[in-house]
Length: 283
Image (tube, rainbow, N blue to C red; front, side, top):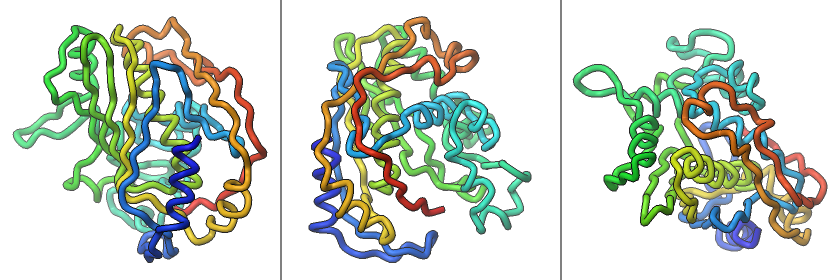
C-alpha cells in the first residue's frame, strides 16, 4: 500500500498535464514507476484504502491465459472489463476488422497464445514458457508478450501491460512485468493484483517457489475527472495490513487453467478495506 500511495502522491506533486487523444481528457502524468510485490511472503497487493474487487482482475488474467478475444467470454468467467472497449470504442466500432457485438479482435492473450511468425503460422508463447519452467529450464527469454505493433489495427485496444518476463533462479520463480500506460486510481489496483497472481499461479503449476514480482509502469497518470477523489478521499484514508490470496491447491497444470478453473478457486483472507470509490472510467 505504501508503494501505491506514494506513487499517487508523486503524480499529484510532480505530474505534468498531458492531453490524451483517445479519451479527449487531460491526464496528470509522470514517467517511470517501479513497484515490487513479495509473492513468496504472501503479501497480496490489494488496495485497502478503497474496496477492491480482485476476482475480476484474476478472471481477466485467466481469459488472457485462455486466449479470449470476445467480451462475452470474459463476462462468463467473471469480468466485464472488456465490454466498453469491445462495444463503445468509436474507433473500433467503425473498424472493418470488427466481427460484431462483443468482438475484441486480436488482443492480449489471443496474441500471446498465437503470436504470428514471419514465415507463417504462430507460436504459443505461454506454452513454451510453461514447458520450460516445469522442466527447470530458463533460457533468459521466457517472455509472454502481447505487444505486436503490426496487429494494432486488428484489436479494440493496444495492450497496456504488455510483457511478462519469467526468470528461474535456484528453484525460485521471479517475474518482471512491464506496463506502457496506467490509469493509477482505477487500473493500477487491478494490475497489481494481476502481476502478483500471474507469478503465484505460474509458480504453482510449474512446481517452483514464488519469489518477487517487479512491476514497471512507464506512463503513470491520473485523469482530470479522478483527481479530486484521489486527493480529497483516497489519500486521506489510512491503509490496513495486506490480505492473503488463497489459491486452490488442486490447480496443478496449465490445462487446469485452460479448462475447469473459475474465480471461485481463489479467495482472500484478512481483507480489511475502506468504502468503494467510484472513479470515472475512460474508454
